Length: 474
Image 1 (tube, rainbow, N blue to C red):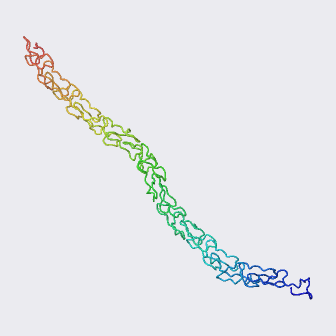
Image 2 (image 1 turned 45 degrees about the vertical axis):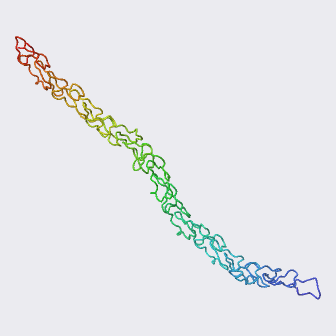
Image 3 (image 1 turned 90 degrees about the horizontal axis):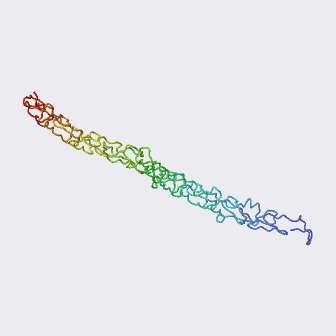
């Protein structure tokens, strides 16, 4: 107040005589004169109190007005003015902090967004934030430096916000950190597999194989197994062991032994293979115990004419009269040779030689006695000889013959001697025919058959011509 109504003091004041407080000053109630706000503060016209200069502005004058603050004293881009800034900002004291940027008059430094960082002070715009380099990531706002390296198994393009920004695709891997793109991921090597995001290839498990670029193990197929890790191809799966079968995929060992009556050569996928190349039903001529890798041949002297044999008992002794030469026979080789006989289990057609006095034809199981009227002086004969002329063979199984006695004759094959008839005689042995019987001499008579000499002389009073039977022959 600077005017009075009249001379001397008065209690009554005319409001029309009070002046409006000017901008840049403070006028508390009852003020006689405006008070300058002072540096770091400002006011507008008519304010009773000054306000602290807000962040984003500076108030360098004692009488800074609101208009001047907002028009002239905005904090410049790249600098930050905190509350109460009372002097012109300078780069060495007011530069915008790392990890941020400061537009003109910003009330707070603005953080660089995720995927970016700012290692420098005094930046004015988001465009001055540095995009996170490929191979690294920037996980938070306001980063002064990158957060870290991209994790193994992953790659991080520019602007990545996490250590596992992009996984290396299945079939690839990345052992080292800081991969920048998918091209930095390598093809999974043979013997290993690589699911998505693989840092170190996973060893191929037993029972499986892994070709180059595998995302998962492939099982060893039927008829095989894998008893070691790191198999690199299907060919490295082990063919099922001979005598065993492998009836599943991804096996680490054979399922079990081949069934009796069957054989499993290799790669068998059932315990009873239906045929080659994996095995089959045990064939004729052999037998297959449990776990057979190949048929066991029936021994020499035996045979088996049925399939599916499972033990040696299925091989039977060679049939009497036949021989079984060699092993693995479905049938006997053939009949025993003439002059020999085979009683069973024969390995050769000459198992036993036929003894003298006997004979055997082909396929004989026992020697046969020479019949009456024949003989056989030698072993190993297929037939007997007829008794020779002048001899007789009265018994079976004769080795030699008997001389035809005097008074008889013996044609070939004689069983007993034939007697010379009455009226004849025969004084010597081994006569062969009836014509060998001599007519009784004249003067004698030959009364009896089988005579070796005449019976006697002719009776008195009679005469006897040749061939007389009685003593009174005339």
